[in-house]
Length: 273
Image (tube, rainbow, N blue to C red):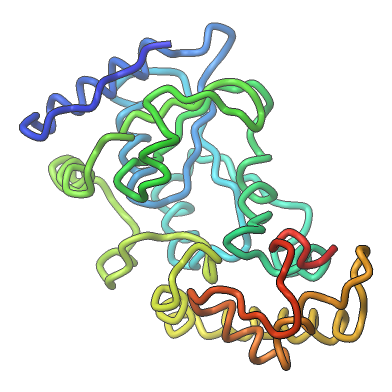
């Protein structure tokens, strides 16, 4: 597997592009084609174009989460008709009523709706970038082992800064989702637990119908679980830390630490055990 080095800050866009193309050409799977992960965001637009320039065999896949912004869904449908859509067996809110609302520490939704969709031991192309978070800067390299399903993840723009991504898009006149022009810097699931409070509130203001669905989820979960005990014999998580479902909802929307009402929580993975 070919690994690139971190480009210097004085390197041109052409140098980034050449290195990305070389990476893609060098790591073509011997027994088939790349599995391309396409979300419709700006980074996906860039890696799809880089793969085209590299001339490598790849089939692009969009995994439907059922809570992606409608404008993003329409963009993929209209501008990238070659992308294969993978649809889940049940929508997000149906699954969440069984598994519980996702949190930063119990984020089952990414695995369920995105990561599990690619074949085992596949070589995937993914648009992850180190500039998105310190954690990604530590974990991801141009060639990274896929520890969940085996195989490899090829990350051709892992070291690209935001400005370089947009420069590539504008210089090549690539279509992109209009939500970026409305002030959304990152696109993804509406109500993603990884979003900060300001991000969630901005999403809910833009798509109030999804806020209603999220609120209904919390109402249904509270009605079902309030007054029950967990498998470990403790009172249900919600009752131990919140006075009512609205308080639990407000905590989830915020970026605050978990409040301690009665006793310390033993970890967020116990939420719906």
